[in-house]
Length: 294
Image 1 (cartoon, helix red, strand yellow):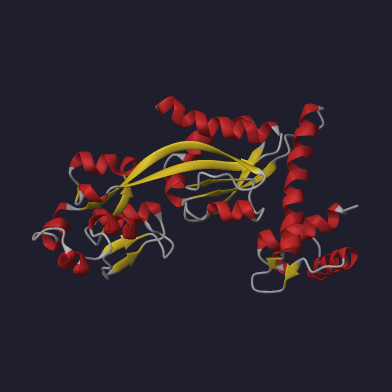
Image 2: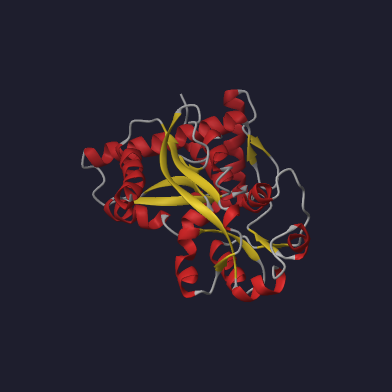
């Protein structure tokens, strides 16, 4: 039988990113955390943590952390249904989300859910093409991603499709694309890209210039809010969700540089296929948010 004290120590080391930070969270000494992990590994006869910086769970360690997340969620619901949580003790749900969703609609969609329930979110931000990997590894209970096929042991629900549009300030467009959006001008104009995982810029160029590789200056901006600001300031052009820039487009602060380069991105909500009221209500809120807007 698994000991929750060992499970909590394992999860704390991974979630907090170190043995010292896990000790602070658990209010015990660092040596006590290390001892619990060693005892757990000896009990199970396998390594659970790779002692790197930060520590990484082994495959067995990931399974155990996922098991603990499930226990926490189900115990919280059981206590609530039996009236054993009068103080409104919170349960934390780790969730993967892409930066653009977090900066725009995600919290609006869950506002009522979070206010109604004693739920805290532990948000893991990554590119929308990669968040499902966190779910597959058991690091999160649900995620926003672009993959339609459910991860094994999970379910998938379509949310919405957004157009990413190629935008720039009028001054930027006049300076860099006066001669048109062609191979020569694109190779010289600075483009804003969220990070090295962001593929929307390359997808746009592939649509406009099929089978061509065009090297160009890149302005990396790993913040959705600052990304739009960089484009509005005329420091670069970039691919922005159309709904995120409606105000700037309406005012003329930004213009669409290349309409043929629109990149549609479909988002899905993936979550564990576990029968719990909280996860089901969270799913309904997210899916219902876009159904109301349809």
